[in-house]
Image (spheres, rainbow, N blue to C red):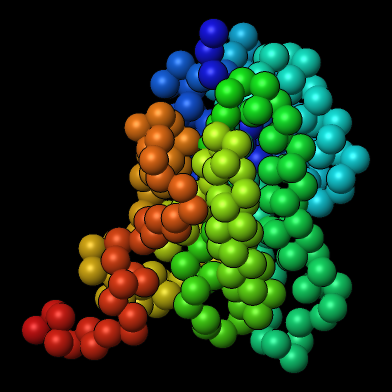
Length: 254
């Protein structure tokens, strides 16, 4: 029987690339997203009707999460992997970040992962175990301006990863995190100016953005049996950005 993965936030970007990776490896995939129109378009382009289902779901709402996970088990009969990829970002100075902004970011990025993970555990246990991969960010461990809500939510997600790994590991469910650095997503292409891109290139030892497909490879690896003894870790997929700190560009380029 084919294994089954759930990928949240999979209408586009890293989530969609991850769904495609699971499909190429012979898995069945449930694609969850709040954007119904984009999700439907992406699903049609996948042309994998027998191996996929799409569910419109706001992962910050417990009732919607419960309904979505039940639909996955009713359709595919099992859950082997969950990728908590859905997330939002509100980038503002701290004094301009409203309490509503704060709650919105944490409800999706942190509470959503908590809700989805809890909802998937029973089905994973019925299948003998499973894997949860949380998509965090290097912003979870590396503070910068405009990210008081986003960075805090990702820091919380990294701690949630460890907490879940400690408890669920005893049950045969591994929990790990992937922390992307700058990735060439459609959003990044839209909002990152030429100056911002140049500065990132100067600060990353590999001197480029990552690709959605590179992130998908790392996510799939941690979800697969090849990572069977990896639990509770954060894997930075960032070209070395976090490892080098701020750095002195002139010393590296001269």
